[in-house]
Image 1: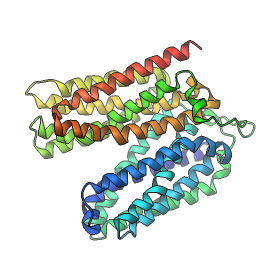
Image 2: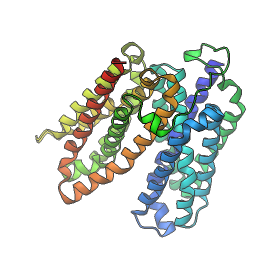
Image 3: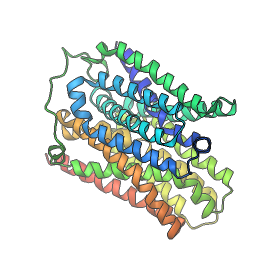
Length: 391
């Protein structure tokens, strides 16, 4: 049963990644069909982000009341329905309406799954689970590309992913009984976990070290999203690298994250979450320095992007996995939910801020902007460690 449940959670993490890259891969065709401006994708993205933030903040209450399995299954179902609606949309406003359940479903399942994995599985499994999220992000553009290149249209791309989500929803609902009574790495408990009181936002913020870890999470997601979104523009506009080469190496940033998480799974249990976070931030900072070096050898900047991806790989899963140990198992559900909300805030608002900096000052400030968040992460995570050690 343990192996079956773990396989289901791996599938659920793939499901988490599937919708994340659909809009970007399909939007050039979608906007032409819908008569929407290029910038309208940002409106949809913001509505989805708003939904994820709201559902993340309330995920702890839902999970404690309904259980992680049911919340996961219902959230995937909600996302599947929203994706199906996207596939039949003929007006931009329809996408905006459907973006609400899209975001609500995505945020709830993200927080519920991450907390469940942090409570019940090792750091090794947490890294591998997040690598499977990367697999989902990689698969969906391939599905959309196939549908577009074969004349099936972007609607069929969305429908295909929706059908995959629906199939997973059915599997998750059927498997609900095996979500109960599982302990870390397969050791069975005598029954369901003892229910704990759901924390309010104010109570969660009062936990020693909680605001610090939220800032660390904000910084990580701000850095990751900004790095991926603006890498090609920086390499082309500031470094003078041709667009094809720049795009190829910018994509390697994400490949570095996924590959890094697979490799980290083999060493995470031995080194522990704190060391993995430190090593990740130091590696990431080294990559940022390579990107920033004012030399004519552009190959160093290209290698730097890959190193940033490898360094970023362990940070997100390790911070999540360390939450029960740092703040108590009884508080982890609330903290993980708030961490997810903080992550979405960073990934939603900080890349556009750099866009303004690039437009009105200089895109050459790209590595400095990334470096600020790297320092922020390091300081905040070390302060969290000090707070926890003082307990």
